[in-house]
Length: 388
Image (cartoon, rainbow, N blue to C red; front, side, top):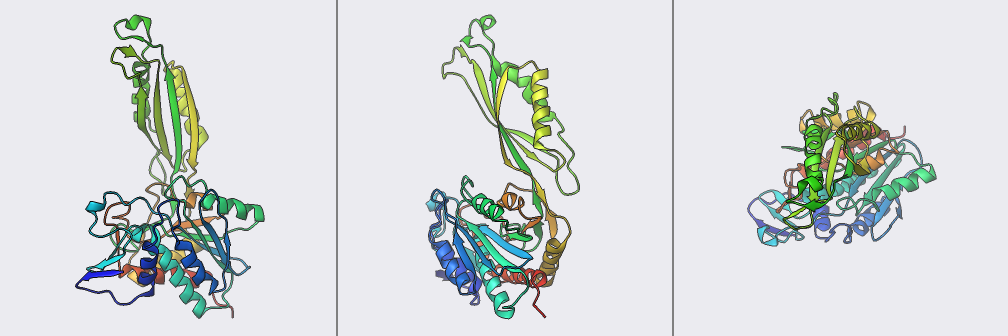
C-alpha cells in the first residue's frame, strides 16, 4: 500500500484487507490469490471451507454452523481489465490511499465488499460465537466473465446436496451517491436472440432477381423497437428490447446479401415470461412474412425480494449506521444473485458507491469501508441472534 499525500485515513482492518485483495491480480477468471487470503481468516473462525473449482475458475463454499436459518454472503474476486494504464494515476493493482479514497482495480467492484464481509464476520463471531443458525460465504472468480463456471457450480452442488440458503447478501456496489442510499432487491431477466432473416443474394444492379433481407427486416425491426412488451410493476421498469449488432453482406459493394444476422436482447421484468416474449416476437416476424431462424439464450430470469426478514433487517442496519432511508431498486445489469435466487427465497445486494466501477481510477471512500462492515454485522446480528 502507498499513501500519496495529505489526509491519512485512520487504521481500519477492512481497508487493510481490501488493500491486500486489490494487490492480487485477479483478472477474470483468475482468482489471483484472493481466496487463500480469505480462507485463512475464515478457517480461524471455524468455517468449513470447500473449493468447488472448475475449468480454471476458483469457487469457495465456506460454512460455519449446521442449523437454519442459513445466511450467505456472496461475491466475486475477479475484476475486469484495467484499461489504458496511462490513464490511471497509479498502478491499478497497487492500492493507493489518496485524499481519503482507496484507489485500485476492484476497490468498489467488489474487493471492498469482500473485505467488509470478512471483518463483519470476524466481529460477529467474536461477539456471538454460539449464534443461532449458520453463516456462509459463496465466492467465485468467474462473475465478470462468462459466469458459467462460477457461482452456478456452487448452487448446483448445494441443490444436489439438499442445502437450502434462507438469506443471501450479494456485495455488488449498489450505492449511487453515498453508502446506503440504494439496495438492489431484485434484477431484471436477460433473454438474448440471434436472429437470421433470409433473402436471396444477387447483383445490386438487378434487384428484381434478388431479395434484400435488410430491406425485409427493417419494418419488423422498427415495429419491435416501438412495441410495448409490458408496463413493468411496482418494483420493475417496463421490459425493453434492444438490437446490439447487425451484420450482412459479403464485403463487396455490388452484392445484395443473402441473409442478415441481428443480435438482440430483452431486459425483462417479472410482468413477462421468457416464453411470452419469444412467442410475441415470433408472431410479429411471421406477420411481416419473414423467413427466419432464431437461436435463443436465456441468460437470467428476474428475481425479486420483497419486505421480509432480510430486507427489513438491511434497511434498519443502513438507517442505524448512516441515518439514510435506502431506496429499493431493480435497475442495472445482471448479477450472480440470479443463480442464488434459484435456491434462496430472499436475495438482496448491498455495497459501496458504483460510480467508478469498470472505469480507470476505480476507487472507494475509505470511510465507507468500516461503515459497510458495520452494516453487514448488524444484519448478521438481527438474523442470527445469540442463543439464550
